[in-house]
Length: 204
Image (tube, rainbow, N blue to C red):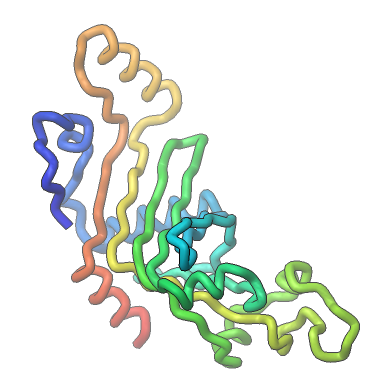
């Protein structure tokens, strides 16, 4: 979505936006951010309008064209009620060391498809469910509490740093004195059209 803000009043964004990167390049750099952070914040909306976020670890990326995110979660948790109330969600990632970040805006889909669960399951996930010792809720891939939340984005925006810590500090210092705008990175958008194309490639 193109911003309606006045560029002359927001020189930071105007200078940082890179609309020339190819979809392949944008997804490649997005994946680097996700891999470097590992944990994202999934935000959902309750029926009273309140928004709640919690830390979630997505499963490993399965393809170099993948734009969706897949999370394992306990379907007895509050977030499932909120997703059923409003499937629109946001997932954000932030690398405090590099200042790179990513924000996914999209739709959450809930699934208990056994093949999908089996494909992404690993034994370390059991610790998040626990064995209730009732013979049913064992905390394994067959536990009825185990569900997948797949976030299919409508739009992805991210910032990727193009300078290291020293370079960022120098640029900020210089522009603070000169009145310029420090932009030690690029702001990119993966559009809905690009996402739809890559989703098709990923699902083949």
